[in-house]
Image (tube, rainbow, N blue to C red; front, side):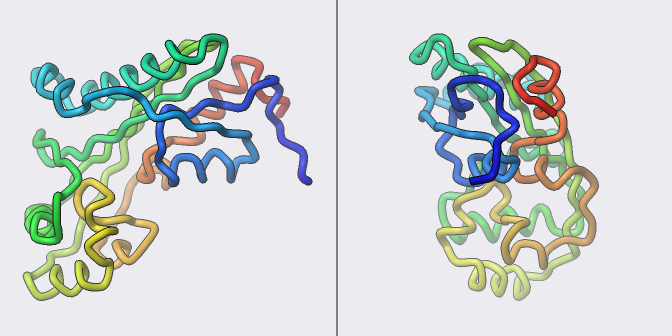
Length: 203
């Protein structure tokens, strides 16, 4: 089995059940365990409505990390959250295919931001936000409906904006500016730099 660069005795504890975030960490040869945070995201967002979208992402990530770190003292916990920001309007995961079509119609032909926040809690304390900017092609109703039919209702409900760049959603885009892992919700390069600075990695 390949050797991991991870130096700590316990695996990273990801305060999320997101398979994408877990896969990103595992692809970097890091041992990962997951725990679901006990956070009411919509209530916290309602109480934080004066925050900018990047600060909202950071607030949500901090709450997730704190929730899990309190249950697992002595562990290094990663909390993460991502906010889709279209000119200051925050989007959420669409509730159904119709809501996904409506979101994509609003995003079509425009540039939006994905703010991905990461908070380290427990044995290491740190936090940061990275932003990617994505521009959708101009899309008419037929093209949007065809995409939603191709992706399937389950997939379009799984992500804010109704798309997954790593799937059929790639067809929707004109340009992407930013690191791919930021788009996926866990900016790996700055995270690895912080883990390296904290003595958690051996290269």
